[in-house]
Length: 214
Image (cartoon, rainbow, N blue to C red; front, side, top):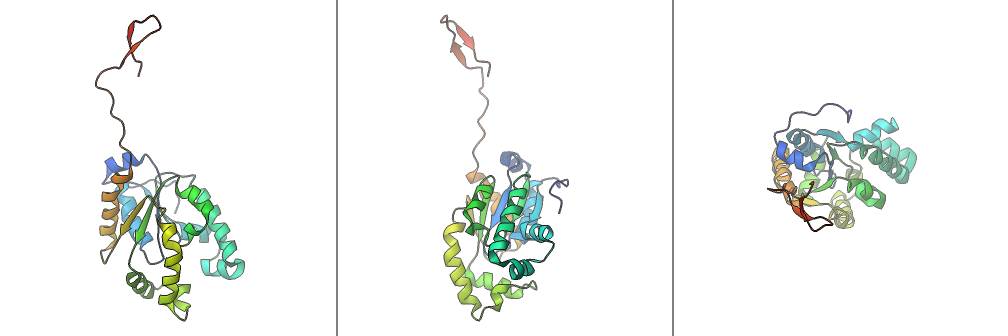
């Protein structure tokens, strides 16, 4: 996807104005539905949607499993940071990030330039989604996928908790979860100050009352 491509007309225009072009970064474990939720969320805001993993594969010219196999996890994480740095140079994006993006402190410098939303879900739901997903998932190759997922979540939950907003989802479809995010976003955005009803009055150096130029 081209981040500079035109965005659709928003259904939540007032909220989009309050965001002032800030990117919305979706974080969470694999199976949390970041891509599925990100698309309707972006459409509602008039934003463009970007899958960071797809952008990484495009930059690498290789699928992610191949990057892991050839460059190791450290090589993958370095490339992930470089791609995130590039993404941060754009605005008005909803970005579905990789599940492990939160593990590198440097990435938070990019994420916190926008609004970070943690899509949380129960372990049982995450595992069921992963097993139903046709995309190859390395976690499922583990002798104990459920145990591996529990270990990963225990390590990552404190990191995901650094997000600006946590949205706990259940069996709802992606469009409903996107609506949850839209309804919760105003709670973390600052209200824009209202213009004064009349000009403020100031005293000048001679003690005379003058109107503020603001």
